[in-house]
Length: 165
Image (cartoon, rainbow, N blue to C red; front, top):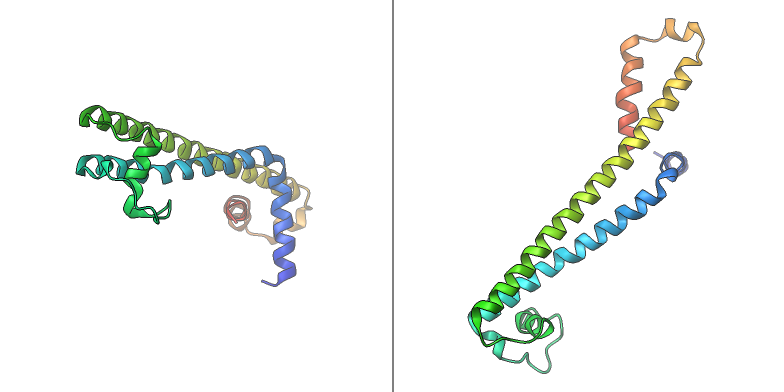
């Protein structure tokens, strides 16, 4: 596929995707927030492990970077309100926070999946409608020359493949 063919194909797909800009923006936001929350989950687990192992009382080394994984647990505990002296309430609070993050991450990821599926379905439906309209505008000789199965395949499968990219 040449560069000009790829550009014209991209413009072709953008013409069908353009009416769904808001959904596309929503998809980007849902995916970004879901990804950010998924990154926070290991940090909460590090805080739980640091509290269980008793490392939470020690301050991170002075020269350590904020993202140093060796001091991630104590840093997260400091960020969440400092180490508590009672083990069980701290673990319950951290466990609850992890559970809420996991549920929220899953819900947002599902929302992103449904949004992407909605966009794909609408683009495919519009593409198939335009293809059917073009097909019905053909003269009778066109239908005598073409095989019915081939036309049906073009109408169903090729439109779906085009919408998928």
